[in-house]
Length: 573
Image 1 (cartoon, rainbow, N blue to C red):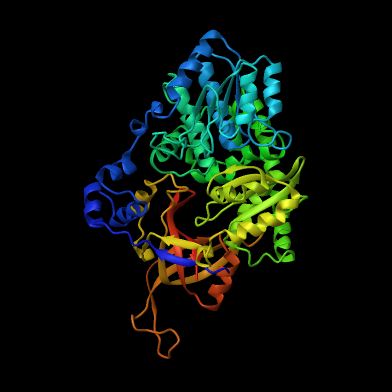
Image 2 (cartoon, rainbow, N blue to C red):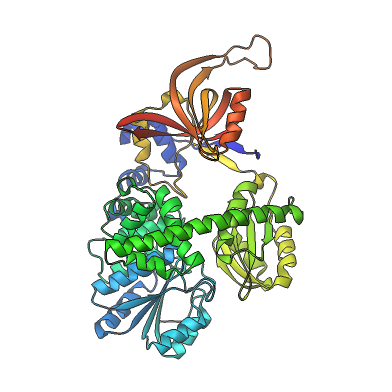
């Protein structure tokens, strides 16, 4: 097992006073402080904030201009084309815009680039297609901020162009309106909106979606695009999940049924790891128009067909990913990259659509930034996944002279590069990375050192009120030393699930397990425990010594009408 650094948050506050004021357990008060929620107003919003706390769309630059212009286009019956992206965020934002425009009396179609033939964002061929189709107005969503040349071409044909995006801004395209909360000088308070949220804000600015029924698609995209679930994003997801659990969208209902997800208990986990990957698989291996068609399916029968196709595509994607990860491991060994602090892995035969997934898997295994490059139709393309200490987008700007194009975020990026430049790309990224050995040791952040016997159903209920959990609002993690494990059993075809019973052990403060006379005794209630991460390693460790230290997340396990506390072990030593 790789080295890990466990660290307990040391943030201070009067947890007793917070607990008393907000009628919560002091442990919950500590978790809230660990999420940097400070002050009565912020705590109140975190615990109880609803839709009334959402920000005014018109705080974004060009929102008034875009809303007024688009309403005029709708009133005049103009031909409107929405150009999205091929991932969850792009598909959802495209659907939101079309629904909003249609509800306001307009008509719009959706065109999503093909990952292989068009690449990311708007291509010149898409502009030419729009011209041939007599399109009057183009609206981008989840892309467009880096498409100055393509937008200039559209403008030369007399088209109106409105950009809605959420990516980093290197330069602002010259068009009729550009909405992106990351624009320099933009005063919108939440800079981490996903593309679907920006598109929804435009619909709302036009007076559309008065009952906020499109919020469910915003929530789905926000989770699927892995943006921070803090501030406004957390409200969007919390409220949107309520709609998704009762959704009347035939496509989403069919996808959930096909994947065995109970919508009434839908969580961010199901979006991020079960349903979302099926929508993404369409854009990776086929065309994202299939995912768009699922959302627009007119009835259950049509929706069921699309859902089955998307699940099959995702199964293919999983198989291809496993093959790619194995090739990446072999390449690291063959190219002697073990000591590189930034991994640049060239896998020419791997499908370019899964490069980012492979990069993410290798990053998890080796705890360092990873770029996976593949040979596409138009040269070498790549995707990167990063660690907290390394801003991938910023570092790509330092070597942009080697790149054909690039874009992304601190934690993920995409690029195109000439094959002859790959070696120099690897060398310069490593020389200029600025990473220390300490940066490469994965950190496990712990909310509190808490004996498992402190866990109750009431405490778990209060912790669940802090949901939705995700990036920026992680599920609370606790830790305890000297946990006694008994009756361990491995389950699953791959023996990758471990179940057992655990209890606390009392160890004298001056006791040394290595010295004769050491005594420890088991005490307190026993709990069901489960481990999905390194289950075989944990089993082997218990067989040698059942006294372990764990980090864990508690939950209620319900089965056949029976409720029991379950301790989910996330790490151990």
